Length: 298
Image 1 (cartoon, rainbow, N blue to C red):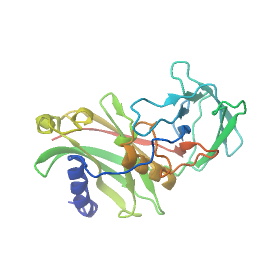
Image 2 (cartoon, helix red, strand yellow; image 1 turned 90 degrees about the vertical axis):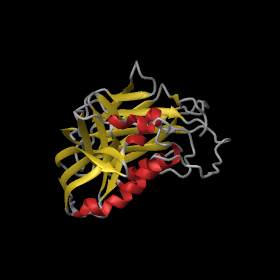
Image 3 (tube, rainbow, N blue to C red; image 1 turned 120 degrees about the vertical axis):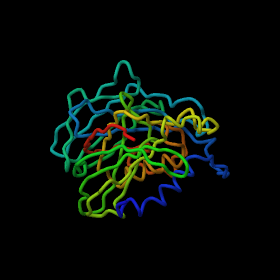
Image 4 (cartoon, one colour; image 1 turned 30 degrees about the vertical axis):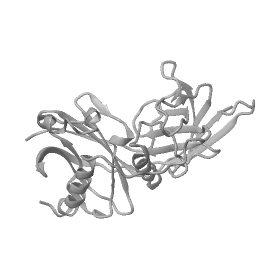
């Protein structure tokens, strides 16, 4: 067992235990009388795509309805080199704005988001802005997905191999199983380099998902309906991104506050990181993506 894996195993076991039991601690949140606010969430990646920005109006923390999508906004992204990309609302997805032209982000480049909309209906458009700089890309050498036994259960471990660069770095992992992409904030895995600074990442596990052969063991779990299982032979695609500390904090706080509903959630926003100015909440970020695939094996 490599040194990195050994140092993280106690933490992983504790995290795993708490993911299998329900929390009963009472938490008091003053969210019932909060006024709706503009929610802005979007990314610029290094993929050659029509980049997306999503706009909505917040709902109450315990409201079961999805946030109201915001239409009719003027949205632009301006690069640090001066190129301006206009976005238009997707006709089939209210509240989703896409760059009209393909925008391929570049590591080291900065991006400025500007959203204008008469949010409060007083006849005067409000302006919301945010800035993001794309961190350097960190490449994966390989990925393995192997079966392991932990605390009486069988799991598939997603193991990373890569050179960790110098400096303070934060990472985001997203995964796809066969043809299904798991894109909720609650399904993101966050890593930092506290224990791996400038070292070779030699099989660091970024995720443990239960073996589908043991589904019966989880039937009484309160989260059973949303649990993700892996079957031997599944094709796993992992996206690995070097992200900003601010976005790392944002995702972590969303997961802690409301299980990371994707990506629009009700309050409380007062204690969640945001880089949106003008009274809006949410986050605008930029990151490069490296992908690797592996077959789940026993």
